[in-house]
Length: 256
Image 1 (cartoon, rainbow, N blue to C red):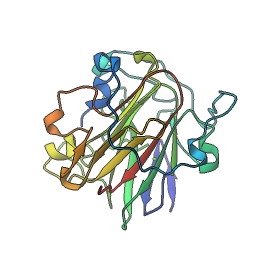
Image 2 (cartoon, rainbow, N blue to C red; image 1 turned 30 degrees about the vertical axis):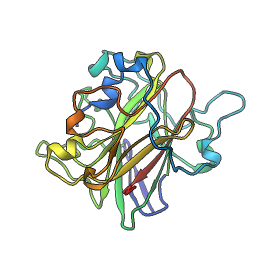
Image 3 (cartoon, helix red, strand yellow; image 1 turned 90 degrees about the vertical axis):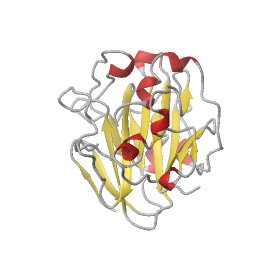
Image 4 (cartoon, rainbow, N blue to C red; image 1 turned 60 degrees about the vertical axis):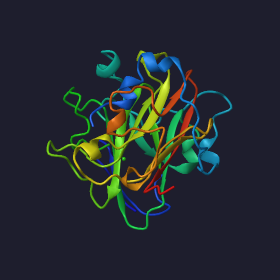
């Protein structure tokens, strides 16, 4: 498996590898942040060294660029997008992952190559369009106050009529300065469904609490996740209070 680094990271994934508009994670910014999501099915994410945290309580920032100031609130909140843009989301090795505060481990049930693309909610031009071909992608570490998402699909990522990524999405906030340090995540089929395209399976789980957000192929089963029916509902997914470390296990091509 090869990784090509530009502003962000792009990778084609095979089994055992790696590891819409802004809706779920953005709406978690304000009123929904006052309550945690009820844990759904416990994650099947494997434990291991990447889930550990430094005994010293000090976290690595190696590889990150400079942090950028936040602005806005609620749906328009813009967190740290890295300077240079995208340097707030980096690939790290399994052995180094435990040194970082916010980490996602991505694995798959897929038997064919998949592509996973990460982005910031806000693109390099400062507009809320980070999902329009601005690619940031094993183990992925996130800097403080990072909010964005990722798309995953076999082969290449399909796009909608506007050029936005239109597969199943994972969304995230990590240590939001605009939300008292809360973190959150969810799986979303909204963009894929709005575009009339295939909904891929995906599972995201908070390793520490067991809270998960899952969608199976075709949205046949949806648990604590977003479809078009939940577009206007905030707080679905995992909501993590405090300013502690977060470990998210992601399974692409999840089938239940």
